[in-house]
Amino acid sequence: MESKVIEVRNLSLRRGQQSVLCDASIEVAKAEIVCLLGPSGGGKSSLLRCVNRLLEPPPGTVFIHRQDVVGQDVIALRRRVGMLLQTAHLFPGTVADNVAYGPRLRNETLPETRVAELLTMAGLGPSFAAHPADQLSGGEGQRVAIARALATEPEVLLLDEPTSALDPAATHHVEETILSLRERLALTVLWVSHDTAQTRRVADRVYLLVDGAVVDEGTPAHLFRDGSRHLSAAFAEGRLSNDGKVRDA
Image 1: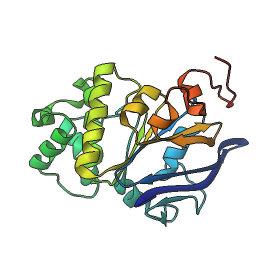
Image 2: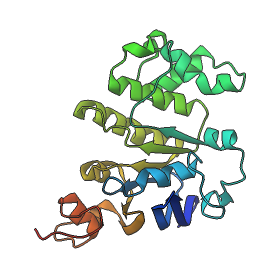
Image 3: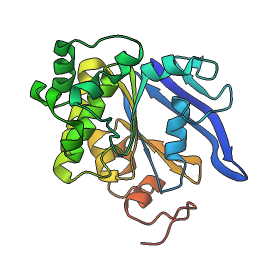
């Protein structure tokens, strides 16, 4: 794969006596959107969090531009690798206060014009800057979270089911925003989802994780084509159990 940005090589991870990830390997190219799909508890979020060291991976398993994330300064890493969670977790204050949060941690002031630009890029108008953050809808909050992540000028976005709590219209807005940002900024996106319809709309490629292991990989068009016998298709049809067994149709 050309221009690899994220590489995960044979990543295994345990939590106490429980295996969370087992020899998982994935790659994400520059400006590519890759979705991690699979049953709950399959290891998707754990793998995602290893990329920006919210979970600490073993040395020699997770790389950004071929540099091991272990040993890198965590704060610097998280400026380069932004993250959105299932809910926006906005801070008290205005929308502008939230967007400017990352630069403020570096004792930098984000100009009003830059706040307005970021809000526009995230699918909101500049007028939102003065809105109290606690008066936003769920979809608006997620788009503010996108603008806040963009304020540190990341090259990678990690998305952990950012639309799971949103209605269909808000989900559509967030998806369109991410697709637009990928085109405009050449962002590299690793997106955890349990929604196969969503992966068809947004993903260039898909990895299926079951019980901590990568068990399938390909483009949505290939994995979910009519007559597909891929495990991803079985998952989409509700026939794949959490332990990877396929039930008859």
